[in-house]
Structures are given as structure tokens and as C-alpha cells.
Image (cartoon, rainbow, N blue to C red; front, side):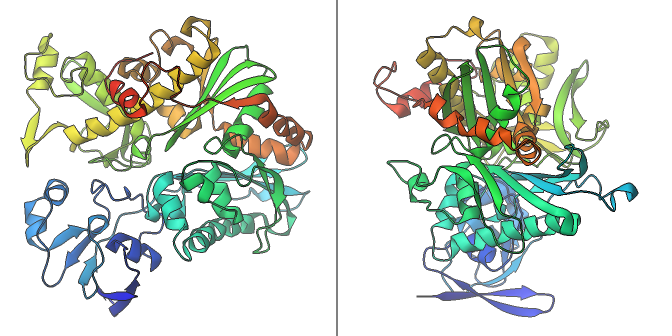
Length: 525
């Protein structure tokens, strides 16, 4: 039975429908709010889904007090993701803030006429990167990146699939993505003759209207394996979707691996794309690959953390340790003598690594109670404060809270599990790895030393980590300019073995125990 809530808008009241079981955030997203807003999928942590009850506000939850503050809570503000839609609510919706987009340029003057163009797209759960290129020589004539407009349904794959499986949810998400693709295609005009979209299995299956149940529920499996051209409508060229290697190892990985193999890397190597999922391939030979995936959640994208933000102007993407404390490094390379607008995922990892090295955080992720081993460390430790029962470290006008540390430990544990499972399955010692290639926007900004300090990768690997760039987008562009590369990608599924994160041979028989044992800032084999 449909219920309704009422919104106070500048143009007057608006009646919003909600389905039974909807949260307020989901009902508002269905109604066109929070499009492209990086929401944390019900964690109550990002604060972007704020709504104000204009009458009869419910009792505040602890998460609302922590995130919004007592003054805002007393004024009626609550978090829509934590509130079931009961019907009859009278609300005001806060502006969730701008979603970053970085379209580099439209066509240069000399590109007004010419040959065929292609549109290459890397569609991640959080971000979307695109490139319009000349199909004759591969030259980029326009490109950019921004957010996946589906973000308002939740920042991770699980919440996205859950929304897609609700009545009409898949069509709604598909339409949002098609809106973006048609807008980018319009930049190329009638010269656009090719389209390639790479992404994880959930994203490309939603786009192409393929079955999703095998991705959302155990036993997991692929109802559709990609590796084909799919009509999307809207006047778009049919889209080539690279092969899917497994239920959680997708077309973004097959595209990226195809592009990387053309660089003739030495074996064995590890390809790692860290985002909302950790998708990894351990390449042992040109025709032998092991692949694994682990759900990381949106934390590395800067979503769901106290002052998390997608990388963009004014956002801290790293930190430096100086004689007087911790200084942020902003997205645009500028110093931040005052406050940062937020902290991106790579910035959080670098900050955690600094605090770990200085003794402010212990291996279990707790803010240290005892004196730090160095004077600078002790000075930093004394900055740790507490509010609403939660410890936090203040930096650049932001807070790094104990709950943020816990989220990073979860991400670290999942990544550690995937790396350890691959090395164990191959019987390979860490020293045998020639290189670790970090793909994607996160890989381009994260500190290799921070990944090793926090235990994402084994000791000694940092010196062999290589920034590989957006290999998924590079592969998508390759498939448009060099059709023979599609055959190369098509051979990958048969040469790839999916490695489960926990097997009968694992040191523990329970996946939960294996995960928990890795929730420390140290690599666990």
C-alpha cells in the first residue's frame, strides 16, 4: 500500500509517494532528490540526506547526534537514511551539496569536422569517467569525469542492487545512467559511431537491463557474461560491453587487463583496482590469471566517513607530517592553511598511516591512551578529543573519528583477504611479485607507503607499486580504435580462475573469523 509524505519546497508543498519498507532517503531518491549525491547507504554517517521535521520530530538516534550535532537535532533535523517512511511526515530537505564533475574540455576549434568518433566510458559504482576519441588514431578530443548519478541509491554495490531489484528500481537507475551517456554522446554529434562501456558486473548489468538476482543473492553467479554489443536505445550507438570474468570481477577488469597486457609487463604481477570493491588479478603467465574480489564499501571513495568527500577542489587527498603537525594536501595541489572542504579516501589512508606511525593509533585502530614514543607523536595524541562519547582527531577543520577508523579497518581487512587468497592460491611468495599495478583514480592518489603501513599489502611491496592510471577507460578506448583487442579480451575468461576469499584450506574455516582477524593495521597472510 502506497503512503505519502509532504515536502516544503520554495514553490510550495509537494506530495511524495513512498513504498512500504522505504526509508525517507529512498523515497526521496525515487522522487528525484539526491541524484548524484554520494550517500552512505543507511550508515548514518555522511550527513548528506538531512531532512528537517516541520512537525513532531522523532527522538534523535545516537548517530544523528554525532553527525548533526545537538543544536541541529533540537531544530528538527534528522538523517533520512535512518528513518523508515511512515507516511504523513512534513519535511524540509537540505541541499546535499554539489557533486563534482571534471569535464576537461569540449572540442577544440580544429575538431569541428573529421572522421568517426567513439565514446569510451568507465562506469564505476561511485564515479563515471568518459572520453570522446577519434577512432582512426585514438586521439582524445574531449573527456571528463564526475559521479555516477545512481549514487543517491547508496554508495556501494549491495545497496545499488537492492534498489534495482525493487519494482521499477532497475529501470529508474538505468534511465539515470542513460541520461548521462546521451548528454556525453551529444558532444560528439552525428560523427559518433561507437560506444564502449566498461564497469563492474552490477553497473553494466543494470545499464543493459540484464538479470541481477545472481549478483545480489547467494549462490552468486553470472546470468550474463558480457563480451558483446548491446543496443541501449536513446539514439546511442550499440554499446560494446567487455567480458565479465566472474560475478564480482567485471568488464572494467577485463578492459583494464587487456590494456595493461599491451604494455608487456613482466610476470608475475598483481593488478588491483580499489574502489567500492577490490577487484584483483594475479597474472602468472600470458594465459594464466587468478582473480578475486572483495566488497570494500564506499569508504575509499570518501563516502560514509565523518568528513568524507569525493576528490575535488578544496578536498584533502593526502597529508604531510611537518615539524608542527599534520598538514593537508589539496586536490588541486594548493596548500590548505585553513579548513579543507572534506577528506577523500586516499587522504584518510595517509592520515591513518601518519597517526599509526606516530603512535596516536594502535594496531587495533584505537586512539592511544598512553604517551606516544616521540615528542611530535605526543603532541598529536594530545589533540585527540571526544564528543557524544566518540574519540576523534581534529585536522584542517575536519574530524577523523573512531568510527571512521573502524570503517577503514573493514576496508583494509577485505583487501588483505583478497591479496592473501590470491598469493595462497598461486603458492607465490610476496618477493616473487614483479609489480603491483594500482588502477583507477584512487590508485593515482593513494600513498603506496600508507597502503603498506596499514596492511593492505604485504611488507616490502610499496617499492613495487606502480600507478597504472584509469586502465578501464584506456581499455574501453582501445576496443573502439583497435577492434582486434576485443578478441584479446574475449580470451580472458577461459584463462582466468576465480579464487574464493575463504576456502576449506584457509587457516580458519569461518569467513567471519578470517575477516575479523585482519581488522588490524598490519598485513595478515
